[in-house]
Length: 417
Ligand code: UD1
Image (cartoon, rainbow, N blue to C red; front, side, top):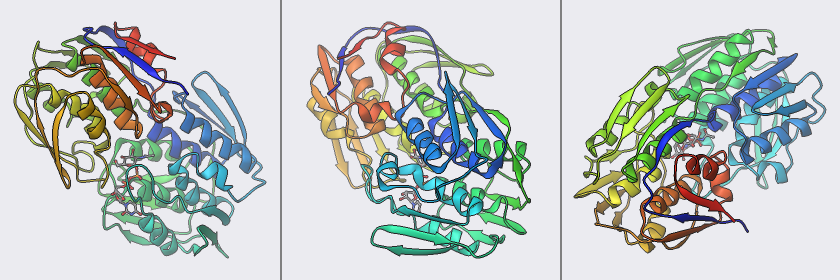
């Protein structure tokens, strides 16, 4: 079992590049099965979740090659239409293959993704939307048995919550449907825009991505294309937090500052100096961080739920009291019990966390309970007195490419054993 060892208290400084966005690469990989000819996706991060998506594509019959951060997919021959449970369970977001398979092959069987470490993650919005497009879905014995007798048809779909995954699944299913699909209350995350950009390059007719109404005019077919995945805004936010908590000074490169406009002001409140360029962010942290105003997670462009856990350790050692409100997921404070082992003073009441800043935290043996919770422990470990040992780091490897090498390159004392 691999673990991360962190010797805390080292100020980090230097330059660091941000990887491509996992949450963009996954739906893009699913989208490749809609195309004829090859798609070449650059800037795909080298992560276990991406490998899992590539395994699904290979199983379906696609020719998948991986070279550095470029994945090439040729989806000319789809030979399987189901996704076995073993592959589905490797990655919860494999549900995004449903919309693409519904459009491309018209029938599929996959297991219900079920709950996960963030609490129950229903897919009712995915299913009701796909049904509106004409997909017949039977839910039995934990499986989703789906088929269509004719081409899917465009529909007006109103989402009761701007779900990222549901918006992606609707786009994938409707892009080659008969007629026009209008999604209202659509998610507007940058990953949705990236998916629309890729599909439009393939010949799709999607407008409004990034806004609350997305219009998809169905086309007959799509051609593979070359595309570069957008930078990962959560990884950029995590590195900013690493710089901030160690009193450091960093230039974060190959990122898109406009994608984290809700995160930067929070860091400024803590006393960090931030300067943004077109594709980079400079941060210089004060000696002692200041508490922050209430941080409320919201759909984009609000504060991202995925950045809540990496930010929390800053509040833990800040001067004063900070309040977080988690509005997106039910169980997204899993890192708190581990942070408490390090000396954090955090009270949780439902979706609210009250964090009383303490003067110092201490290294401890802690466990990554989920991806962003694991990142939170790394950030805390960087600032803790003594050694922090993090176990179950496979969660962290789902979303951060070579995080220990990257942090070591800017002066952190961190190693994987
Ligand atoms: C995506 C991201 C995840 C991020 C989240 C919110 C990927 C692979 N994952 O997850 O990192 O934290 O967006 O920004 O892109 N919901 C329902 N019914 C549904 C679908 C969702 O009730 O059918 C609820 C969820 O339980 C949750 C909320 O809606 O409470 C947001 O979920 P959603 O936006 O769908 O997140 P994901 O696409 O799963």
